[in-house]
Amino acid sequence: MVNRLVPVLLIALLAVVHGQLWFGRGSLPNVAKLSAQLEEQKKKNVLAAQDSARLSAEIHDLKEGLEIVEEKARSELAMVKTNELFIQIAR
Image 1 (cartoon, rainbow, N blue to C red):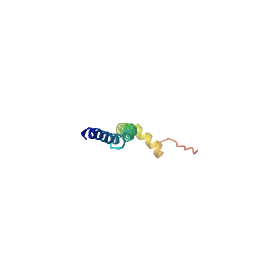
Image 2 (image 1 turned 180 degrees about the horizontal axis):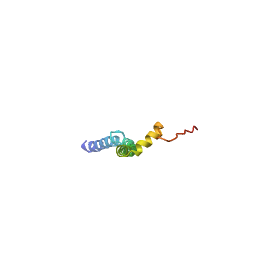
Image 3 (image 1 turned 30 degrees about the vertical axis):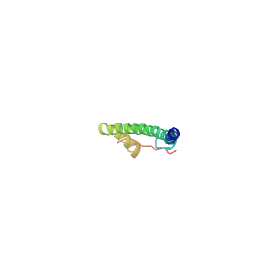
Image 4 (image 1 turned 135 degrees about the vertical axis):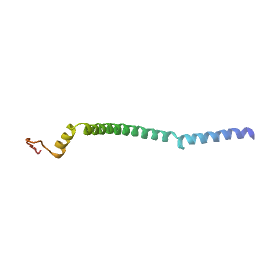
């Protein structure tokens, strides 16, 4: 009886381990899905870091230099200096 119980027990244990491999929390499909999500998040993080660096540079320019302020006023508010002529061409 013991001779038959050990192989049955080992087969049952193998089935449980195999089931966990394919359907459990750390299964291969789940790990693949999480890896894909991780790569997507890394790409988003790189884009966010680039945006952050660009905004930091713009903030620095706004605090330190007046050129960017003048450029913003001219482009966004259509402001002109004294004795300048502003001509807008419609497309």
